[in-house]
Amino acid sequence: MAVVDEPNQEAIAVLHPGEMGAAVATCLVAAGHGVLWVSDGRSGPTAARAREAGLADAGTIDEAAARATVILSICPPHAALDVARAVRGFSGCYVDANAVSPRTASEVAGVVEAAGGTYVDGGIIGPPPVASGSTRLYLSGNQADMVRALFDGTALDARIVASGGPYGASAVKMAYAAWTKGSAALLLAARELGEACGVSDSLLSEWALSQPALADRLASAAQSAAKKGWRWIAEMEQIAATMKAADLPPGFHQAAAEIYRRSADS
Image 1 (tube, one colour):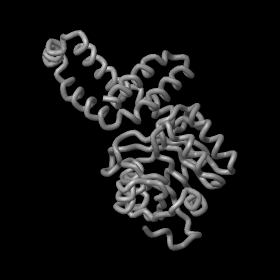
Image 2 (tube, rainbow, N blue to C red):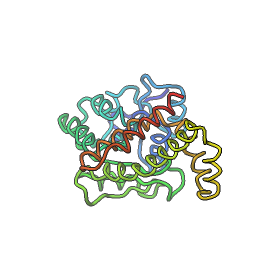
Image 3 (tube, helix red, strand yellow):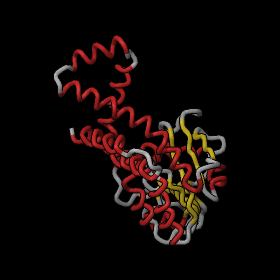
Image 4 (cartoon, rainbow, N blue to C red):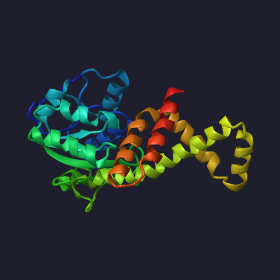
């Protein structure tokens, strides 16, 4: 796999492009930016996504950090701190666009800033951006305007969070997912309760009568949990921590984490 032809070329690094990261990187490429990724230790499907997105292989994290002026971290929330620690000596702008609590975001910022870099907080809401209007990237921090401008004219709608301090973008993500993924977990738990009590048929019949929209939502929640529940465990735990820090009950989302853990184990 080819590496960047010009070692001193300014570039944006999307280190490990999963489904979301690859789509975000595709937006950057479409806007005319050079985008790097890291192949070291990555799987075949990741490499295929990177090729399809038109990314250049920097080979290693150290090489990507040396060449990039901006790094976007888009990874499962449990890995956010480890990814920041892996980018040793990076002195550019580090954008953490992961589903983490403001407290975790501040820890990531501490790692980045101790190494001489600048931190921008981010939170993505919506599916991988393919069509305009589907997905927002919320940003906060001193260089948030610069990062927002990188996505001008692309399918990803980058927006500044003017309130909430330097970690306002993470707070928006936590509050939003507290409902979307939290309510999906509650629906799955209600179905499990009906099954455990032996009344599943009657429950589903009643939902069909009084809550007809729940059938489709239940099917969607179950499908999503089976596919992505493993990465939502940590997200629910991050939301629980955010709730607790705001003096709100964390138990809703601690329970949601357990529901997704069961989905991942089944």
